[in-house]
Image: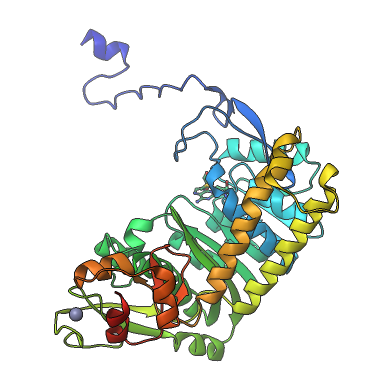
Length: 425
Ligand SMILES: C[S@@+](CC[C@H](N)C(=O)[O-])C[C@H]1O[C@@H](n2cnc3c(N)ncnc32)[C@H](O)[C@@H]1O
Ligand SMILES: [Zn+2]
C-alpha cells in the first residue's frame, strides 16, 4: 500500500501516469516542443537541418528519410513544370518538400503543415536558413484541407494515404494536381488481400506482377474516391520504387469526364498455375484449364501520360545542362564522375550527377511501358511453366516487348500468353 501511495494510487482511483522516458538525444523543454540534435545536409537547391542520430521510424522527433530524395527530385521537377499558384505540403515534417518546391517555383504560395509542433519548428528554421518565404500550419491535415483550397496538394504519410483523400478532393482546385505516396506496399501488392479489401475496397492476390498490381490498386482506389464527388483523377505520372508507390494525378471536375475515366476499370482473371491473365471474368484458365482468381475491379489505363513524361525529360535535361554550365573547371564540357570527385565541396554536384542519369532512364522506361498490359515476371513464369529463360534482350525482340520500371526481370508484351510462353526459351 505504501508504494501505491507513493505513485498516487489508492484503490478505486486511477493510477497516476508514469512519465515516458525521453531518449538521450531529445530533451523536452515544454509540452509542445522538443529540442533535438540536428545536422546540416543539402538536397537540390536547399540546405536543411535534419535530426541527427535518430532511427528512421514514426517515433522520430521529426521524420526525414534521405532515401526519398529520388522522389523529391522528381516531384520538384513536376512542380517546376506545373508552377502551381498555391501548394500544400500537408504532411511536411522537416519542410524539405515544401522548401524544394518554393525554390523552383518562387511565385507559388507554399504552405507547409504538420501536426507535430517540433516538425514545424524545424521547417521554420529551415525556411530561414534558405531565406525562403513559406507559410506554416500545425493542423491536422484533414482540417487544413477542409478549410482551404490549393492547386497542388502533396500527401506523403506514414503508410496509407487513403485517410486523406476525401479532404484532398474537397480542397483541390479544378485542374489541380494531387501527389500521393503510399508505403503500405504489403496490402497493396497482394500479400494481405483482406487488409487491401478493407482499406482500398479492391480484390487482390499474390501474382507475379505484384508491384504493378500495387500501383494500379492505389490509382484505382484514388480514382474511385474522387469519382464520388464527380471528379476525374487522371494519373499523369506514377511509379513504384523499393518501399513506396507514388502517383501524380490531374483532377478535373465533371460527371462526364469521370465516367470516361471509369471506362478503364475491369476485372482481371488470373491463373495461379501458369500466370495466364485476361481482362474480364473467366471460369477457367484458357491456357492450362487451372483455377481462376478474380482481381479488381482495377484501373487498366495508362499510369503515366507519355506527353507529360516528355515534359519531365525536357525539364530534367535543362537542369543537367544548368549544372554542367555552373560546374567550374568542367564549364562547357560534360561532367565526368572523376571531375566531380576531384572537386572539393562538390557533394551536391556529385549527388545530382549520380541521380540525374538514373532519373531520365527511369522516366524513359515509364513512358515506353504505357499502353501495355501488366508485365510478366519472367523468372516466376518460367518456373511455373517449367521453361528455361533466354536472354531478356532476345525475348524483348521476339515479342516486340518493352522493359518495365517495376523490375529488371519483368517484360511487357501485347502478344498472346501462348506466344509469350512459346518464346520464353
Ligand atoms: C512520412 S512523414 C512526411 C515526410 C516528408 N513529406 C518528407 O518528404 O520528408 C509524415 C508526417 O506526417 C505528420 N502527420 C501524420 N499524421 C498527420 C495528420 N493527420 N495531420 C498532419 N500531420 C500529420 C507526421 O508528424 C510526419 O511528420
Ligand atoms: Zn493456367
